[in-house]
Length: 123
Image (cartoon, rainbow, N blue to C red; front, top):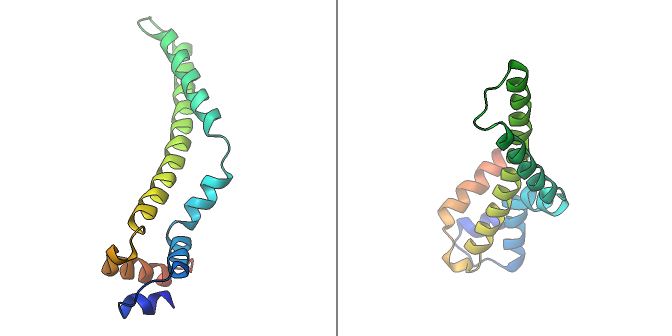
């Protein structure tokens, strides 16, 4: 078992690393693989930015201010979706960089991560 290999400081096999990857970034990989709206979100964010620019340096009515609020809400949602996907991709990248050389892994940190995963209600 992967956990025992870590605790006993045994060398990790590629299978061990694959299991660890599944545990640590499997959720991010699945989401990034299935997500297909990224370009739509970026385009929508750009569109909303253009809409907001139309209001710049103008005296606005209460109705226009409410319209702007709606634009900001849409922009915040698009930005959150963009940020969420980019964060997941960054997690995957960092994991892959950290596991290029299994000998260089910080085993103590990974044991802690595995113990937290094992102890979590989702496990």
